Length: 237
Image 1 (cartoon, one colour):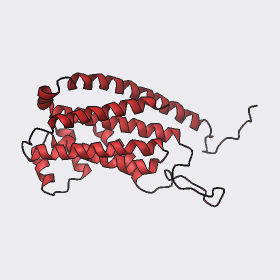
Image 2 (cartoon, one colour; image 1 turned 135 degrees about the vertical axis):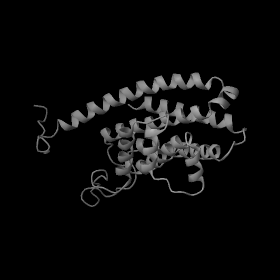
Image 3 (cartoon, helix red, strand yellow; image 1 turned 180 degrees about the vertical axis):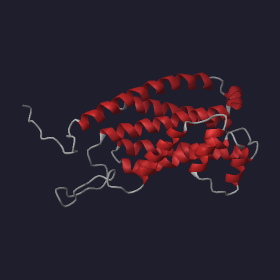
Image 4 (cartoon, helix red, strand yellow; image 1 turned 135 degrees about the horizontal axis):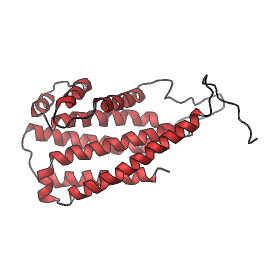
């Protein structure tokens, strides 16, 4: 069902790896450049680690990983445009995600603040213990062992997590591709055209994920009445 997500995120991982390889022999030009390279590596590691628990039906494990990737990515998006903020962060200043989102409202390459707030809320909610997202495992009440990936996947939440993961990869490639465009034009000239081709594919995958999310959510909602009580099954009749 999610083979297209695997294909697209693998392709983004490969594209970013090519970029890192391309700049690996180029000395840093200053603190901003060093900060961007460190954040890029951090983002890659956490995005790479996020997908596996999503597919293993351990969404509660994936949320903190995705939140770390999101926070580093939004910080990187500011640092590539504001060298003074990059220097402040490098010097040990605490830059809150609220401040980062505010900065992204005013910088030349803006990000929709509502989208950023929604992503942050999504990952933050999943990163903290709450009854809605921690599944009931019924240990001792029907289940004798409840550790690891043994639960039935919640397809609505799984597809939602995949969609947001893909969004982060797309944003990541756009940000670092722009920042390192001059180095890439010298050492990997096909990177830009490969990026555009991959972006078109990712748009198609994201559109399919959104349609699947809406369909799955509609199916779940149809199982409950207006009071939130699950309707009795008809046993096929």
